[in-house]
Every structure is written in structure tokens, then in C-alpha cells.
Length: 140
Image 1 (cartoon, rainbow, N blue to C red):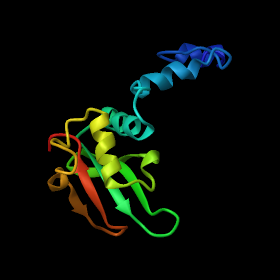
Image 2 (image 1 turned 90 degrees about the vertical axis):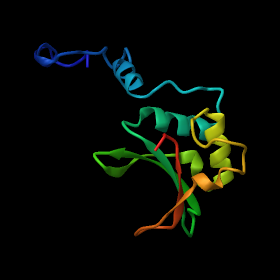
Image 3 (image 1 turned 30 degrees about the vertical axis):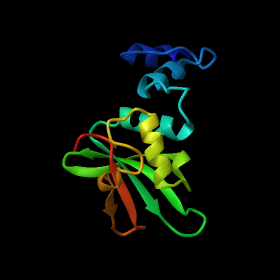
Image 4 (image 1 turned 120 degrees about the horizontal axis):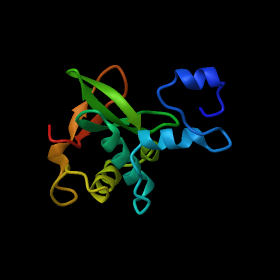
């Protein structure tokens, strides 16, 4: 940061502006892709998760109980293992049909076809947590 002591700035490969100059903002913006403000919150979050993942992406919609009836997460494939990439906050309590519509709104390559005809693309997900479904967003 630009307000760091001179000895720290001299050791750094790069520096940003000071706190007063919002120096960290440019670095943070470089880490996250631009968000299309014309999209719904759900579509924008799905598109951002897909664009920022280092590998193929699937959306997992998990059905729980209690206050969190459902949630949506983006998972990515790294080194042969699926890892959680990011939560989709607008996906909490939403339906699979809303996830499908937002995915289409975001212009992502999957699912294809008319709404309601993509059920074949969804896969069941089970494990130690709640049951759910998975929708591939990348050509897997």
C-alpha cells in the first residue's frame, strides 16, 4: 500500500495508492471480473463465479432443512478434485427453475434448449451433507 513505510515499499515489486486514494480498490477490482449490471443478482453472481473459476464449473443446489431450505454453490475442478469455488448468495432459498433461468440470462453455455427441457443436464449429488442437484456450466 502507498502509505506503508518507505522500506516496505522499496522491497515490494508493486505498490498501490494510499488508503485515502482507495489504493486497494484497483487490486481488488483486478481479481474479480466486471459484473454486468443489467443482469439480475442471481444471474450476475452465477456469471461471476463461472468467469472467475480456474477450471470447469458446476452449480450445486443443495436442499437442507431449517432456516436454510436450499442454497447454491459454484464448484470447480482442480487437479482431478472438485472444490467449492464460491457461494451464490442470491441462490439461497431459490428454485432449480430460477437457477436455470438465471443461467440462461447470464448467457452461459449450459444448459441448452428450452426452459424445462434441461432436466437431463441435472445430476443428483449426495454425500455427508444435504442432498442436491448439480448443473454443469462448462463443457464437461
